Length: 189
Image (cartoon, rainbow, N blue to C red; front, side, top):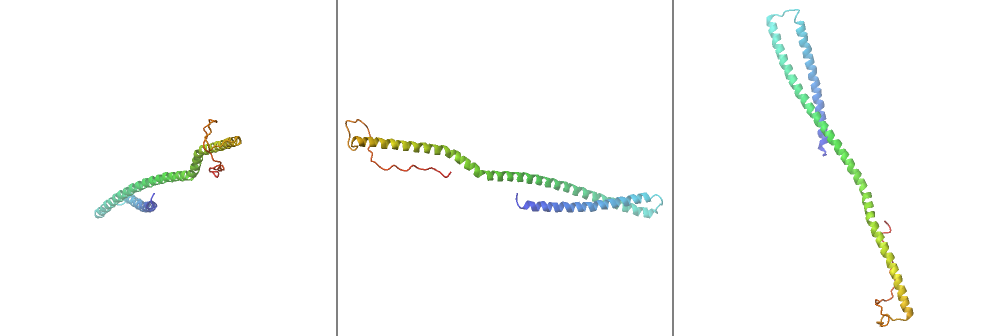
């Protein structure tokens, strides 16, 4: 929602209040005119006005009726505008409610994202850690076997640099080196 909508809503509310105030004023005027017409019609019976005065009254009554019709048209127009504006206000309130709910939902999702990514990363990393640990264990076992075989060959007095024809073994050329330290993988996770 943009920042102009709250000011539009405030302006609409002010305009609606102004229309209602004007409508109340006109309703009071119509009520007064109706009471005056009723009083004139009711009080007209006891005395008979002179013909020239009766013509003036008729002209005044006709003028008042025309004014009353004009006021009624204006009241009807303002009531339609008020209803339309009330509908717009209700629609805006509904939209604000939906957007508020959606923003709350998105904030919740954003708050949960780091936990979700951490969990997913840990799930993906677990098989890799297991495989690395298995490979390291196998590597240590193979190194121990290699040292054992090298020691046995050394105790028999066989020189590995020469091609021994009588052993009929296909042994690799191995120079004795200190074994590397096993690699630690993500011990802090």
